[in-house]
Length: 229
Image: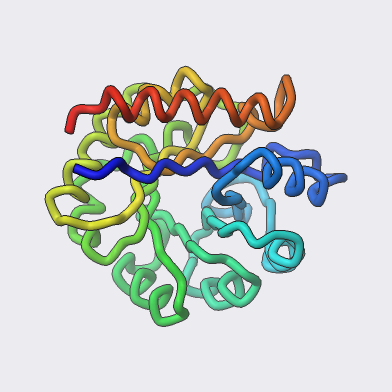
């Protein structure tokens, strides 16, 4: 079986907002594979964060893929705006108010990739009917809406279920993990089958960005090497 493609996506929510251009340059130079942007509407989650204008500004400063995590109640209303702003992958929540299948199809009509995210308490069975149409399954390892939370290890069986489902379908969808992904947690997530790792404070927190990304890269490769195939 060929090696799985492992990708690191630093989350700009944890970067210095006064120097996002500098943060983008730093992670690009350090070998990041994508950038993750958290979009919050103040309804689906309490906080408000990035809108299309910010996504467009980021798009103008990088060629890295932009992975947009839409923590919004009505994703159908905003898919086109975020796609036009430069989002490559539009990840919506299964718990949002719009019909999930309609969201998936609308995102694909716009020419983008689409992912479905599950809160820690959402049963994995809810994503199964959509799996063949998805480019990414995002397992939240914290409760969405706030940065700096600790990794919830009890979601790892859900990661393993996502991995098994994608493999059984013969698909190429990413199994993504987001929330408290330190180098220690990254090992376990990769071992469970994750391939796309959203990393915020573990990149932009203490230490240098290049060294932090290097540690994460080593961690995910170590975990993947020990994964059950």
